[in-house]
Structure formats: C-alpha cells, structure tokens
Amino acid sequence: MLNMLRYFREAVPFKFWPATITTLVLFALLLVPTPEGLTPKSWALLAIFITTIVAIILKVMVIGVMSMMAIMIISLSQVTADSSKAAIADALSSFSSPLIWLIVVSILISRGLKKTGLGARIGYIFISLLGKRTIGIGYGLAVCELLLAPFTPSNTARGGGIVHPIMRSIANAFDSDPEKGTQGKIGTYLALVNYHANPITSAMFITATAPNPLVVDFVAKATNNDFHLSWGTWALCMLLPGLVAILLMPIIIYFLAPPEIKHTPNAVTFAKDELRKLGKLRPPEIVMMSVFILLLVLWADVPAMLFGPAFKIDATVVALLGLFLLLLTGTITWDDVLSEKSAWDTLIWFGALVMMAGQLNKHGVISWFSEGLRSGIVSSGMSWEMAASVLVLIFLFSHYFFASTTAHISAMMLAFLTVGVSLIPPEYVNVFMLIMAAASCIMMTLTHYATGTSPIIFGSGYVSMGKWWQVGFVMAVCELIIFAVIGGIWWKVLGYW
Image 1 (tube, helix red, strand yellow):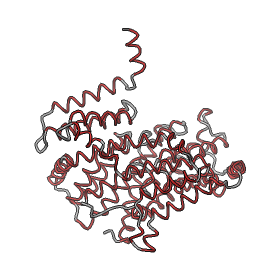
Image 2 (image 1 turned 45 degrees about the vertical axis):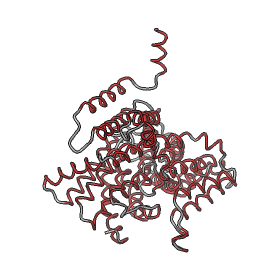
Image 3 (image 1 turned 60 degrees about the horizontal axis):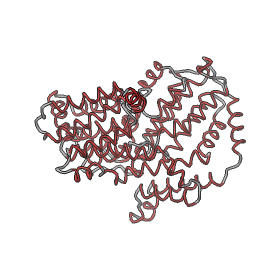
Image 4 (image 1 turned 90 degrees about the vertical axis):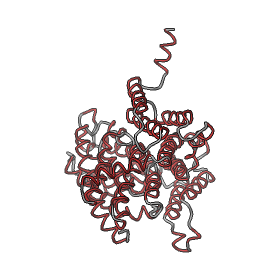
C-alpha cells in the first residue's frame, strides 16, 4: 500500500494544491443555482469552461492534458447534447476548423527556420548591419522578429527559440552575464527588446501568434460576418501602427533600462564571424526562403489582386502548399513533422478551447454574459466612447490574471466584442474590433508569465521581476496609444470608419 501511495505521489502529473483549488471551483460553481437566462446544462458548460481556465492559470497540469480532460468531461456530462454520441461529436467539432489547422501547419513550416539555419542567418545579418551601437543591436533583433513573424505562428518559437539565442550570444560576447552580475552591461536592454518586439510583431500578422485566428473568428461572430479579417486585411490594418511601435520600442526601453555599454563595434565583428561559420547560403536555406516568399505573396492575396477573385486561395490551403513543398524538396522530413511536438500540442489545447468557446456561444452563454455586461455599462450612464475605452482597458489589463493569451481570449474576448457592437455606433464598430485585436497581443507585454515567450527570456536572468513589470506596464500603455491614435488615423485613411 505504501509503495502504491509512493508511486502515485511521484507519477501523478498534477500539482496537488492547484488541483484541489480547481476542483473546489468546479463544485462551487455547480452548486450555485442556475442564473436566470441560462439552462442548467448551459450553466454546467460555463462551470466546466471557467474551471478549465482556472486550471490553466494555476498550471495544474500541462495544458494539453487539461484540454483533453475538458473534452472528456464535456462528452461524459453531455452538457451540450442529449447523448454521449452527440456530445463527443460536439467536443471534437473544432478539430475540423481550418483556422486551427492553419496554425498547426504554420508551426510545422516554421521548423524549417531552425533546421536550415535561415532564422539565425537573418538575425546575424541585421546585427552586422546595425550593431555598432547597443540600440542598433536592439533594432537588429526587432527587425529579425518582424521578418520572421508572418511565418512563425508560435511567438514562443520565434522570440524564445530563434531570436533569444542570438541575443544571448551577443550579450555573452560583451561579458554581460547574470551569473557574474554583469547583466546590466548590455544584456538587460537586449533581453527587454528581444521580448517586447514579440507582442508587437504578433499583432501585425494573423500567422504571427497562435490565438490570432481565434480573434478573427470572434470578430466575424460578433459582427455577424460583416467584418472579416483576412490575412491581407489584418496585415494592412496593423502595418503602420505596428511599424511605428517597432520604431519607438527600442528607444523607449533604452530610457527605461539604459545599457552600461552604449557603443558596440565588436558586435559587428561577432555577427560577421557567425555568418562566416554559417558559410554561403545553402540550398535548404534557398528553398526555405523561396517558400516563405511564395507564402507571403499568396497570403497577401496578390494573385487575386492581379487576376481577380477566382485566384483567391484560402490561407490554410496556402499553408498546406508550403508544407508540401518543404516536404517534397526534403527541406524538412516527415520525421520532422511527427516530432514537432508544439504543433500537435497546439492542435489539442487550441482545439479544445475553441470548441468550448464555440459551444458557449451556441448555447447562449456568451449572449447572456454580454447582455449583463451591456446592462451594467448602460445603467452607469457613460458615453459610448467611455464604454469602448473601459472594455478595451479591462480586457487588456485583466491579463495580469492569465498565463495564457489563448485562455484569456477564449474566456473574455467574444463577450467583450459583442457588448461593444451593441453599444458603439455602427460606423465605429470596425475601429473597436481592430483595437481589441491589437490589445489581444499588446497584453503580452505585462508580466513574466504573460505568454510562452516571457518565461524563456525572463528565466535567462537578465531582467529582474520589478524591472520586467515596470517596463511591461509602460510598453502596454505606449503601444495601446500608438495603435489607438496612429492606427485610428491609418484605419480612417483605409476607409474602415
């Protein structure tokens, strides 16, 4: 018996106290009388969803296991249907979503960046061009992020897996090492730039971070498909405010966390040495670059613009074409595809969260919550401008309570968008949608647990928690102002209001 207890204590994958808290949350919600406007089943569905979000925030288990558990509970409890057969069909319904497969396939494509070395080469090229000053290195890292963003839907893979190793190599070249207490020389500044480029670039392309397609879906639902953000539309709308944010971010951080070393002529030499080691552009890199250019052209709907709507290709189909070309040319192998755990992990947890959000909407929970929120705002007597501002600010800064952008967006965004549509004059709805879309990425700036990239960079030790939160808050405010003001003007020029 003791051996059995010891085995379970060592083998069971969940954390005891977070699991206990999560379980208590579920039972407490189920014991609450069904609110007026909801059926018992829809209230139980909401309880399961809230419990799943709490479990993700508390990190009870890895997110994939918790998502599988949510699928199992929804199927077993039959809260969406009258039979287990219909319930499991509902629980697995989102796995046929093209948006989910767009992210999965794009993650598989991005594996080629690391395998071929093209990602590192791009980074070192910009360091060799801009690296004479510390702030120039910062811009080099930011531009590297920007170039990689359209093709790396895992912002964690981009910022933490590709750009961060380059940043650390440069910091180490200047003897800026947290273990030696010399992180302030250059490493703190570069780590913050490394990180804060990530949310900005994530906001600029649908394929720059995993939850963006979910945002697209919610915008379409909230507006009854009157406003649909295609890949090209999103990129065009976020282009100018995103570029302004990228331009200002290294300067703002330079004042918030000034590096001790201001001039870095050795960085150029270091980058050139690394490029020399990489050698000439190799065939796999040429193929990878060619596929990226093709994807960018097709995602931007260039053929449709040149030859008409008949040549428009769905973004997921384009991604599948890119993956097939990389497999066909041997740039990546089927073993690479099978071993890309992050893609298949994303398929499970992202699919489960999308499914629950969809079922909540289908069974009237989102409209019930939205109506309650709308009634509260209306009874306060605030203007629609103030109401829109409050919705954006609450949505953005509530991310302090989330450790996953996908969980946050799944839990709150559709309801907030729906309320906005009901309160804001129709001619300004598109602007509200675009600002909320930007806010869904800007919120990544706030904490050291805000998204998958943050613990990687924070864990390297270059930035203290206090400095991280200070810079994060300032950057969140600055980026929100940039997207609201510059973005608002740009969207006016584009005719969105």
